[in-house]
Length: 335
Image 1 (cartoon, rainbow, N blue to C red):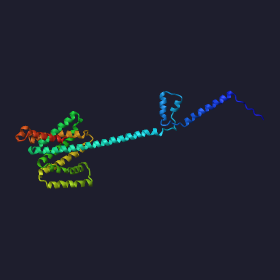
Image 2: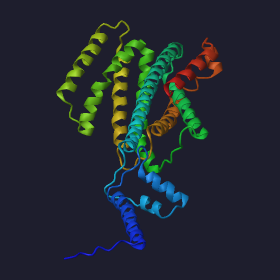
Image 3: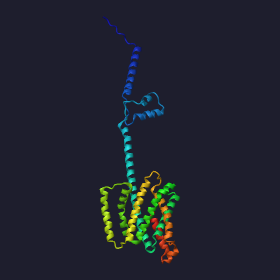
Image 4: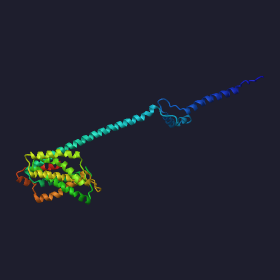
């Protein structure tokens, strides 16, 4: 049997070559679409964005289409994590520096409070030794504190409160015990040594626990009661060995403990009430003003007008020194 083999012509040879070349070109494109590979070091999405921005078409559209089997390279994918870690570490540094600055600020405020308290006690003692009018001195300090509060409100250093009539009625008991507590402290400073007055006033935690238990229902733990034992014992021992001890000064200091802790308990009840809209500074300022209004008429009725340059000179005192020390003591108390 004879098999006839047709001899390829030039046309058939050209068509075969064209089909082979077309198949070789389609195969890489198909394999590239099935298994896309991103260029080294450069994310494929970046290429797609760049080509899309240049307005390229055709092959650029194939590169811009996202493939579900392709992921960002490790180097490009780790960059956001590094940024997050850097921001969290910087935020931690800022919070630590902020905490340190707040601690320093709080320590400085405590230091200033102790400094003002020292000058308050020293100048009050110096004034009361030669000017034995404690009601007048206490009323003068409330007047100084009222002017300081007005300066804060008028200059905008602190927001002026909006006080209602109901709030004034609620604050009135606070102002009364605040007035009595400061007056008893001044009486004690005039009767006994400054150190002994503040030794007695160390009993304030005892009165605070007792009054909180009575009026607020707070039950102290055994540990809290245990801490009160050395306080009470120390005050008793200091009172028994105090050279300047007298019952008037001792009783006034104890009375100031009771009234001040009563004020604290009432303040807590007022601050936790639903009608309260005053912060601590404004509440203390309002209490100071009300105390000045309460005590000033009492001072005029019981001691008369004594704090004048003529009366101080008649007593043989340097009226400028006495007035400066009394005014500075009032500033220190309300600073």
